[in-house]
Length: 116
Image 1 (cartoon, helix red, strand yellow):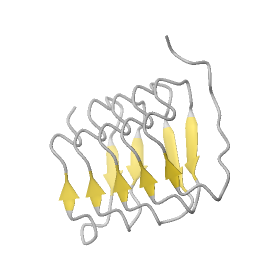
Image 2 (cartoon, helix red, strand yellow; image 1 turned 30 degrees about the vertical axis):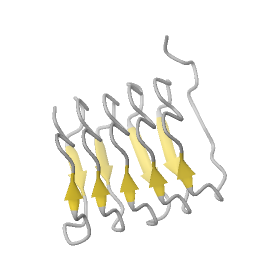
Image 3 (cartoon, helix red, strand yellow; image 1 turned 90 degrees about the horizontal axis):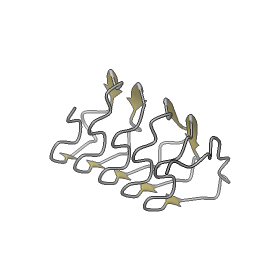
């Protein structure tokens, strides 16, 4: 059953978004606070209404497995400090048409990370 949660305002002191934190919710837009360094696995999986992800800072270093799988995002600008994009992070994001990242900083893109 899909959650009716549509909006979340996260405190700027958050440095990690936990595994499955917003899984299968109706969130439409998420703003990743500037102090976040790690987005864990399954964080926004199956968030079909999620269209926009905004990173307020550039401290994120790792995006976990399945973090945005089956979400509705249309584009993503991955912060320059991200070193690892885990397996299937953006898999089955049918509306995803644009991905931007710093090719000099991303050292590892996991299996089927962008599989559609």
